[in-house]
Image 1 (cartoon, rainbow, N blue to C red):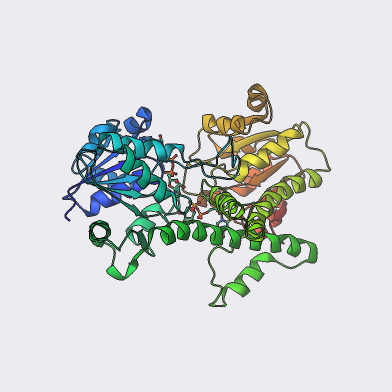
Image 2 (cartoon, rainbow, N blue to C red):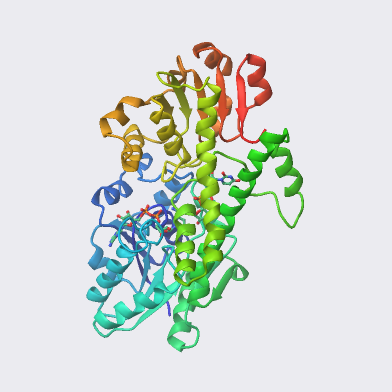
Length: 464
Ligand code: NAD
Ligand code: UDX
C-alpha cells in the first residue's frame, strides 16, 4: 500500500516535530497536522518561525522546508481525517485527575474522542496509528470503538510509540535508535498496514533500526523504556544523598560506574529531580496497571522511582532553607531556569515548580530567569498546583527577562535548568550584585564550582 496522505491528530510536542520530519523525508506524501486548539495551529502557521508554539533546536528549519509544500497545519479535523489513508493519534494522555485511578491511570478521554471522530467521519479504509503513549491493550478499545461505531470501513490499528526527548527531538527523529511498530501480523491486512508504516520510515531510517512486533509488546515497551530511564535518574539521585552524608562525590561515582560497559554513561546525571510530561505520568500508569492486575510488589517497586524523585525535590528546597539559617521569610532566592530541562520551553512537571512552591510556603520571594519560558507560563504552573491563591503566587514569584536583574540583591541563587548560557555569565558581576554570604545551590551540577568558590560564593551542588 502506497500512502499518499497522512493526518495527525494533535499538534503538540510530539505531533508537530514528528510530522515535520515525516513530511520533510517524504515529499510525495501530504501530511496534515490538526488540532482543536486554534491558537496552536495559528502559531504553527506563523510566518515568523521564531513564533512556532514549540521551541526545539532545528525545528524551524525543517518546518521552513516542508510547510506549504507537503506539510500543513489545520483546525479542520474532519476534512483531514477523511482525506487521509493513515491517521496518527498524537493527543495528550495526562494522568487522570478524577474518578477511578485518579492520580495514577492515564486519562484516555482525548484518545477515545479521536477514535469516535475517526469512526464517524471515515468513509474509506484507514490505518490508525497510536503515537500517544498508551496503557497496554488500549488498541483493543480503539478497535472496538472503530468497528462498532464506524461506517463499515476497515480499520487497522498500529502502535508506533514515540521515543524522542525534548530538546534533542530533531536529532532523535532524524537518527532514531529504533522505530517501533506494533501490529497484527496474523492477517494480510494487518501485514499490509505494518508494511505501509515501515515504508514511510524507511525513507530515512535504516531497515535494521525499524522493529516490528505485536501491538501489546509495542505499547508496553514505551512505558518500560520511560520507567527504566527514570529509574536511573532516581537511582543516581538516591546515591547523591548518600554521597552528601559520606563525603563521596556523586559525579565521580557516576563516572566510575558509567565506564562499566554494562551500565553505560548516559542518564547518570544527579539532579534536583526529573521533570517533563512523560516520566511521572508513564510510571504512574505502569503502577496502576500492575495494581489493577493484583501485582502489588511490581507496583510498589516502580512507585518508589517517583517517591525518590519527590524526595529529591523536597530535599533540595529544604537544604536551601536550612543553609539560609533556617529562615527564608522575606528573602529573595533567584532561580536560573524554569524549564524541565535545557533547550525546551516545556515546563510540565519541572522540578522548579515544586521547589518554588516549597520556598513560597516559607514566604520567600522567588525571582526567575529562564531564556525560553514566559512569565505567564510560570504563573500558570504555580496556579495549576493550586496550593495558594493566585494573587499570592503573583506576589511571591517574580520574573525577569535579564539574568543579572534576577540576581540583583538575591540572598541565594538556585540552578534549576542546565541551560548552557548559564556557564558563560560574568560570575564576578553576579557576586557583586548579591547579598553576602552569596549562596549557589546548583541543582544540575553545571557551574564551575572551583571558579565560583574562588570568587567567594558558597557553593552547594547535588551529591558532594
Ligand atoms: P501536547 O499536550 O503537547 O499535545 C497534544 C495536542 O493534542 C494538544 O495540542 C491538544 O489540543 C490536542 N488534542 C487533544 N485532543 C484532541 C482532539 N480530540 N482533536 C484534536 N486535537 C486534540 O502533548 P505531547 O507532549 O505532544 O504528547 C502527546 C502524546 O505523546 C502523549 O501521549 C505523550 O505521553 C506522548 N509522548 C510525549 C513525548 C514528549 O516528549 N512530550 C515524548 C514521547 C511520547
Ligand atoms: C523522556 C524520554 O527520554 C523519551 O525517550 C520519551 O520519549 C519522553 O520522555 P524527556 O522527558 O523529553 O524524554 O527528556 P529526558 O531527557 O528524558 O529528561 C527527563 C528528565 O530527567 C529531565 O528533567 C532531565 O533533566 C532529567 N534527567 C535526565 C536527569 O535529571 N538526569 C539525567 O541523567 C538525565
